[in-house]
Each structure stands twice: as structure tokens, then as C-alpha cells.
Length: 262
Image (tube, rainbow, N blue to C red):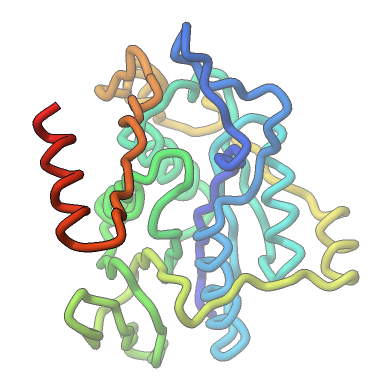
């Protein structure tokens, strides 16, 4: 049976996020937390694989206790179990510390054949987590994957398509393999009422820093994060442009030259 891991993240709805111009801090009050949209497409790809080839889907996320909500949202559309990695010790983590923490927890759960991630997140948009996780899992990686075409579980291989700027590349890779998914062929799934009811009652496994044997405290949270963000600020917007239309080419050119001269 295929063992499938889907990495998801709870993110703030950036469309409603505002920044305090004085302090440079994000104003999170009243901003809802949502499932990262591209992670929903990755989950859809994983569920499609499960439906065609069988398997068990495990979800994992790192975040505050209320991140449990996105795990239940994902359980409702076809995942089988969920893991929440949560502890103040994991706070202020950059992608390096986050990938270490997630893999350390995931290895306590199972060994996985296929690992699905969204291409990037709304809040960071670095695209770093997938490659870092693949390295830590010692897994092959296919970035910008768009279609899982064929899985040969007996031989531990699969055929996958990935999007390039110049077209589509088809690859045959060995498992374990990690994919960062495009949304092209895997639209977000809508949970059924039955799925929602089951997800509401599902047990969620929780790992704190104390629950992971051998965890190096110097590699998690703020101590394990070489990336530091001392301050954020909104971009300075340029002055609005001016459309010149004097009714003729000659008139518009004359007006432009006048403006340049001034």
C-alpha cells in the first residue's frame, strides 16, 4: 500500500492583511486563517492517486494549536490521518528550521513513498520548503509537477509530467519522491457532508518538541533560523501616470515635450 504524505500550512488571508506603517508589523487582528491555496491542489493530487492506486494519506502541518482547523478541512476531502507539530519552541522558524522540524516529526509516524507539497505559500512565497523537505527525506523531487501519469508500485517507480517555460517534461522517477504541485489538473476538492462529519470527530496526533526523540533544539524555531527579518515595510508607490491625448499625434507630442521641459 502506498504511503502518502501531504504537507499543508495555515496562512493568513493576505487579501485582508494590512501593515502598520509606523511599526512595520503586520496587523493580524481580525484576519482569518485559511488553508494555503496551492496546498489544497497538492491534496487533490494525493487524493486522486489514492483513488486510482490505493494508499493511505497522512497530513502534516506545523503551527499554533488552531492550525488543527486546516487539518480537519483536509481530512474532510479524503485524507486518512493528521499530524500537528506545535510548540512555542518551534516559533519564529524560517524554512530551514521548519523543514527540519516537519521531517523530524514525520519520521516518527511512518516512511512515505510519495510526498505532496504546494508550489509555494501565500505568506512567504519562497518556494523553498519542497526542495528542503526532499533533501531531508532523501527523496527524489519533481518541482512544478502537473500530472501523475502512472505509478508502478511493484517496481517503486512512477511517471510524472512537470511544467516548463517551454512546454511539458515527462520524467520517470523512483520512490520515495516529493512533488511540488501545480494546480493545472488537480482542482480544489469540495468536502461532502459525510466527510465533514467524519473529519470533525477524527483524532489528530500532536507532537511537541518533547515528543520527538533526538530533536536538536538548536535547529528549530528562532535558534535554528539563520534568516532574520528585522523589519517589514510597504513598498513606496510611484505617483500616478498621466495619459496624453491632445486629439492628434502632433498635439500629443507637443504636450509631451512641454511636460518634459517643465
